[in-house]
Image 1 (cartoon, helix red, strand yellow):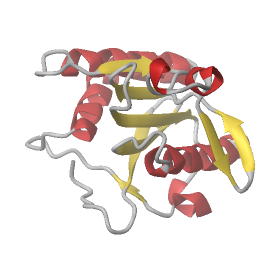
Image 2: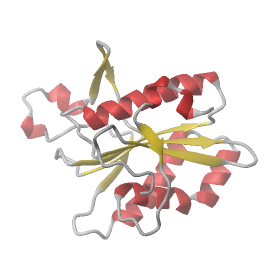
Image 3: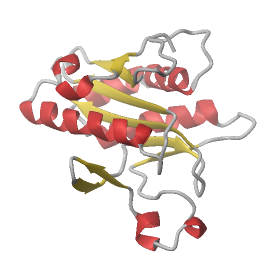
Image 4: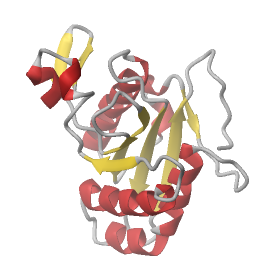
Length: 189
């Protein structure tokens, strides 16, 4: 699948690793590289995106562990904000996004944040096997989710990234970063 052909791709750009860059997206790219051998074996056996997301999250957590204020790295995280900030407990328990008048309960594949706060650094959606029609449809929905997680004032993730893993004998991946017009945009991260 060519992700750039999806109408929802507007605002995304390929992410290219700059080994000198200090950013959360650079750390994510380093984590993906760190699981190359492991991910290849997972991709060869067509493992689920959850299995691959877990390994990426583990490597990312290792990279981020030693910062001045360590980040929390979670997969399929289903909480938002600080429980004490809201009278609406359901809002705390579920991330809800609205698009075109429809409301969806969503859990991102991977987030980097500080639990119990509104400090949201990175949200990642992943898809495995970019060749199928169903992957194309769900990839479009994931791109919409990423834009909403980035732009919605309830969440305001600083970075939103989509990773498309291709399975088979020669596994590979493409990584795309959301960079809406007007924001500091650089394909090298």
